Length: 156
Image (cartoon, rainbow, N blue to C red; front, side):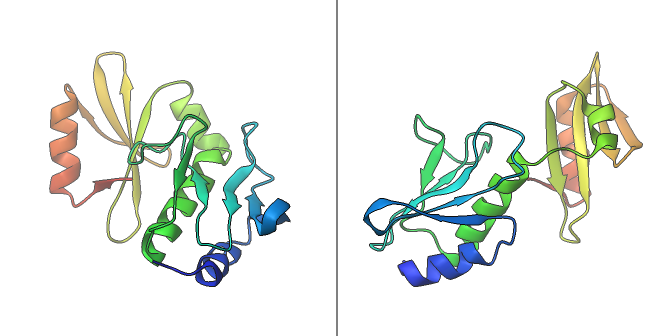
């Protein structure tokens, strides 16, 4: 388990976050550019090592009723990952992506070289985009998944 000081150093390494000291020695970290009402990415980081990260929109975590995940036992890698994903989930989409995605549900897939593909269901097809470029079209979700996995992509 990371100490309070280690967690604090990791969190403070994210320049997008602003520190806000609160009661009982706890610290919040806000993301002011959030496109939602939620600004807290890190909530009530406590000197005993307890704290929470906002993960309402992250499928790989099970947040509490307020949308937070307890980070008490997180490793450095796990803590960095959840904070990066939390910030990304609260960030505005680039205009080009917004034009493609709109209100559609999307999945983001990334490979070892940090290239990202976006999988979107459009009418009766599953389309894979790289930026603004349509990379591939599939008639089923399973076909799209198989393609992405064969190409070395994992779900973000």
